[in-house]
Length: 137
Image 1 (cartoon, helix red, strand yellow):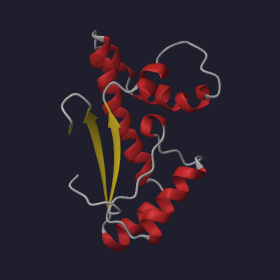
Image 2 (cartoon, rainbow, N blue to C red; image 1 turned 60 degrees about the horizontal axis):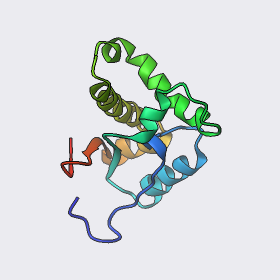
Image 3 (cartoon, helix red, strand yellow; image 1 turned 30 degrees about the horizontal axis):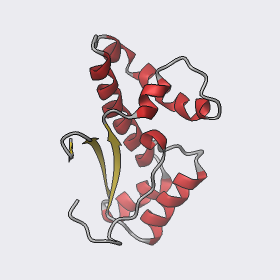
Image 4 (cartoon, helix red, strand yellow; image 1 turned 90 degrees about the horizontal axis):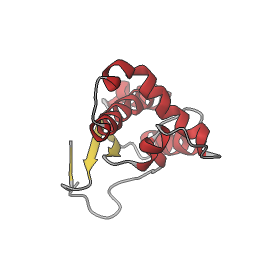
């Protein structure tokens, strides 16, 4: 990103989810957008995401089941496109990309982001990091 220490405010979670019921994430968004007055928010996923792969398995993952259900919802929304992809790795990569898009939508639906967009044209960006190339798409 070319940023210096302290120039980026970061919140991380499994599968880069933006859920309105996640008080931690919503607190971070509120603080960054309303109090720090950031002008850009990035939702960044990454290829080979273990959380995305885990969500697509039928294994019981205990407390993670509820969290990963959100990824299954993204799959359901895009099942026709995803089911047409035969290669599992390419399918997971595409699901990572679609998840970033859906989480950007979730972020844009928050009141803090909508107000900041009206007041100062806050920008929301969706990135997917390629861990092998060290670059984002």
